Image (cartoon, rainbow over all chains, first blue to last red; front, side, top):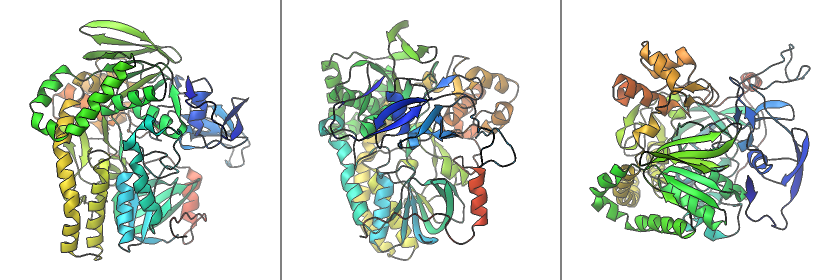
Length: 114
Length: 475
């Protein structure tokens, strides 16, 4: 498990996000991938092909293994995004689905992948 | 934001920052685009706001980045962070995405400073959550002040030892360092002893890191010839082979590293000429003395060209910038050559030691071409080395052929994690040099973007779709 080396640092502003529905407090300005890693589970998604678990691997935006769903939108790179208060994060299953009725996807498509 | 610039620099690492600052200080209109949300690149990641207070943890080399960023902030460079460049045309039209909205600018000169990425390290279990690149572990330390307890560092190269030592200084426990440097490399490097001595200071530093790691009670296991990561849903441990014997270590974190290679996705997608670089076992873009590629008005600076490291990157950035300024008619040939001379001298000093390092830390064939049939090569499409060998055996002759047979390299990372391995597996199986095998034919966009974003770009002809502006240093 990942931990902060200065766990007791004063003045670090905190925000609350939910990860798979569980409210989690993390430092403001943290990357979402770092927030996931310190939450105690190293996985961020399962693969689209054989549903194997994956976690953040490169932390620089090239491996695409840290894909999560943020506020309902799948396929977001957790290592490239900073946490925001109230952010709703789900570990992504497979290729990631946009729920039916999402305004941004007219025409009734219920699935979108990269 | 303008629609047209004298120079657009892509990448705000040490080479890109130096190139941008040099051009802007010479009066050229300059746009600097970078995918990260703060300048520094990976080597100086988060340099303006490090995740830790104690400067001894990362050491003075990291904080050398401060000066480059300060120079950038003082200049008239128009700097756009969080900008993902997804296309550059041969006519130097640059398309990039910020916050889900794209726009296009054009440049008379383009300098690509897109840096390096870690060389793929395909071993059994390298896809398990808990396995990361050493560079990723270091990014978490620099940016977030975070460590993974009880980690095993495995592989070869200076970054392996540097990061293990930073971990120890940060107060983390480290289970072991497993060094895969082939013993024969030491003899080959020794034959270059004189080059090694040219970098005496760096050598001394490296030996000091090793001493510090040992002094903390962390075993350094040398001559490791095999690795496999154990675990079901995440890492539980790692097996390693030394002197023909397999041993096991329990751990939640495995950090892998076997050097870095140029990030070639953009130059490949632009169809710049590339060549195989045997000394560093990688592809590199063909450049002249000013970093200019085979495409007019397109230059490459820093480790995106070939690996020379952070100390060389600013010099290479300045040289590319001087070349661009001369092309723009802002400086004469004589001024360009005179200004470049001290930078060339600095690079020449580093070059000899780089040759020594390349020799010493050249990865072993067994970690470049996975022997095990079930080792995944393409992480995205989950294509194993065994599957690749099957299709090669039935007549598949090249990376693109292999792509259409298996989907290898067709996932979201666009071959970044498998491309080199695929070239090397094909070379080994067909007994041909990598240069004769070639690389994936990459296409733009080089990073995934939404269809809606693309459609919005087509509709908006003149004005930029979003009003963002991050002009620095002008206040």
